[in-house]
Each structure stands twice: as C-alpha cells, then as structure tokens.
Length: 115
Image (cartoon, rainbow, N blue to C red; front, side):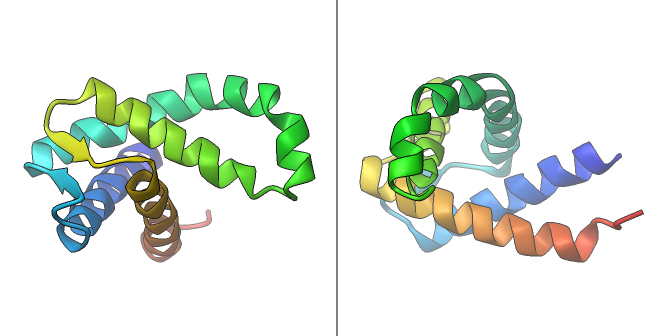
C-alpha cells in the first residue's frame, strides 16, 4: 500500500512542480505524471544503482554532490521514454529533480506512517 501512496505522491509532486517550472518542464496531464512516477521508480530500481556504481569515485570526490547529477540523468532518461513530458535540458532536469526530491520527501513524511 505504501508503494502506491509513494507513486501517487511522486506523480502529484511532479505535476505540481512542472506547473511552477513551465515552460521549461512540461507535463501535459496527470496521466503522464503517473506514468512518469512509475517509469522513474523503475529507473531508480534498475538503472540508478548501475550508474551509481560506475560513478562512485567521482561521487566520493565531490562529497556526494554528483548524486544530484545522477538524479538529473535519471529524470532525462524518463523524459526520453514518455511522450507527455518535455524537459528543456540538463539544467532544468537538475532543478526539477532537486525540487522533486525535496517535495516528495516532505509529502511522504506527512502522509506515510512509520509503522
């Protein structure tokens, strides 16, 4: 049940942030946001550990800040696979991914119980 709640929270956060960052980040409708949340979850599950493993030395050198770049890359990959999303470039993907991380963290701490 928590997984479904997390997907809905991610979709709502992504849709809301896209409205704030419009026209640089566009999500056409909430269905595209839900598909984005599912694809993002799958990419975080499968692709992100591989990228993180290969970029471990640079992540250590930058004291973990390179993980923000990895998150932006994952968002751009999700943008590539979904037609209802358009992100203008790497900088906007970076801004979007940081904002998405912050907003989803706050919303998950409010709506998901620790039990």
